[in-house]
Length: 164
Image 1: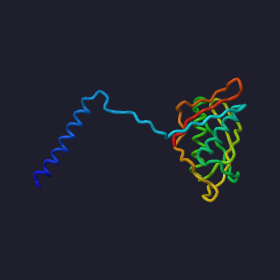
Image 2: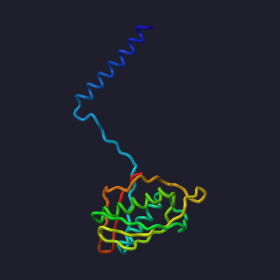
Image 3: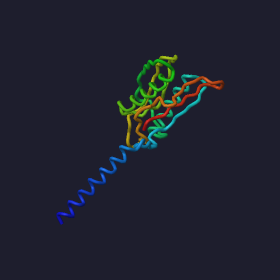
Image 4: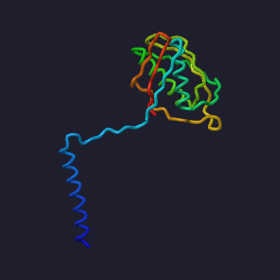
């Protein structure tokens, strides 16, 4: 019995050594794995303020689904960035942060002023209520991957991907 246990243990060590040697001699000993932890969001509107508001509404739908909310709590948000795309990403991350930090479901957005590098807005919402609201997805962060905010012939277009 002792010999059999030793042989089994030695066999495991031997297999590990063979696998390690194989991995060490292979040119590519790794592989890339796809996952579905991201979801895209895009919007179109007639103006830059409206497209930013629509993107925020889309983020809320992504997180909470289509649930009725009221504007019981309001706050002013000020975002500063280096360029319009960074402004978009920072704006949406600020919306997600405000919601998470205060345990609120956003209900309304009003962009009061916006330029290429600054945005001032009011966000309104209500406290999360398990009886009335659901959490569809947990938002980790809005990413810069393929993010865009651009004026087109027919209005403004925006796109981001959200890390879930």
